[in-house]
Image 1 (cartoon, rainbow, N blue to C red):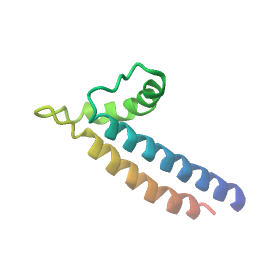
Image 2 (cartoon, one colour; image 1 turned 120 degrees about the vertical axis):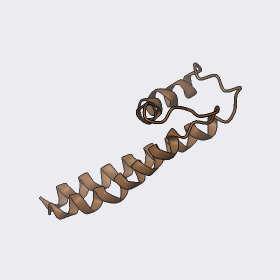
Image 3 (cartoon, one colour; image 1 turned 180 degrees about the vertical axis):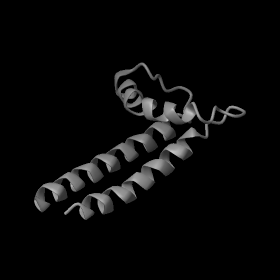
Length: 92
């Protein structure tokens, strides 16, 4: 039973790390106005990250052309990344 929980924990932490990297790439690419978000590599990235970012955009709309929602998105993702291993390991 503990090996299943350990595998689940490692898988979830890996997924969260990959999603965090995708989120950072999406945020960095948003600084370049010439990126066409309809081209295949960028559209996939947008489809993966925008639903999560839109949750926070509904809470904090862009102010003066600056979008502060990624800050909240990253903070919540970091909190989840730090809590998941400890919560799942307590199940063992």
